[in-house]
Length: 376
Image (cartoon, rainbow, N blue to C red; front, side):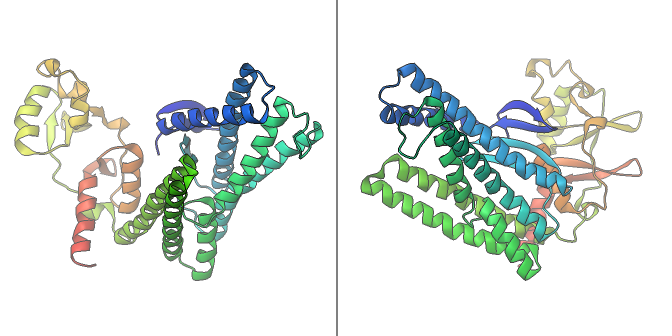
């Protein structure tokens, strides 16, 4: 889940918005404007829209705090956190490593709902201290906003505790299963399977509600179920992938025959004589026998085609110093994580300062397919 819009950093953690967030932000603002208009017909239109937009903003701020609590626990336990991205169904903290024990996994899961519950109770407490009562009599705009935020955050905490992986409740369930089985992969499979069953239930229940007159609400529940189903399946497949790559090192799969190019070659020559004729997509660039960079079709397309005859490989390549390199002894699963995180298709393999070869996404996938065909 990568951010389309970057907002900045909090304690070194990048905060961003996925494009789907824009849609849900508009829908929540519209829904709140209708809610406030029906509950308080005496409010002016300007007040209604001001409260709707402000409440939406504070709701998403609460989601950021929810995700920051996950990030805080992760960092406390030595797990690096890359970013937090807000999207249609809430937010996701991108934690780069899996926890090493069930206790850490439990706290990673439960801290989010605890944070949302605290936010909800604080909002309701402030509203009560301001004179709000359960009947909603003489409710001011600020009170109405605090009450809505209070109820919604508490509901969010309860919803997140549904034991469907990879939701927070699913992580808690996985931690419990991990503690009993003593095996993280087995616990993940159990939690993912449970998550898939719950997700299918959401889909059927949402469709049933839709055909019984619930309208958009039913479709929304079905959509949440669909999202959870895909997330649970992805978690299950990730465990299978990890099992398939267990014990395999980068040096076992890398290619040692890495094609090289002179840095002074023109891009037009590279395209005509190498890319189109050989099918090879990645080349190391050398200068005075030393590797200085790497070039792929991605770098070439960043240069206008009319300039290919005048630009050299060194003009378009990614300098070696900017590349993510891996050692031959690194587990392939870790190399694949880096490939996915950095959005590249290959990584140079370096040992003792010398280029040993390349490990590519295609090589890893072919290895997994071969294992599958052989039922290994």
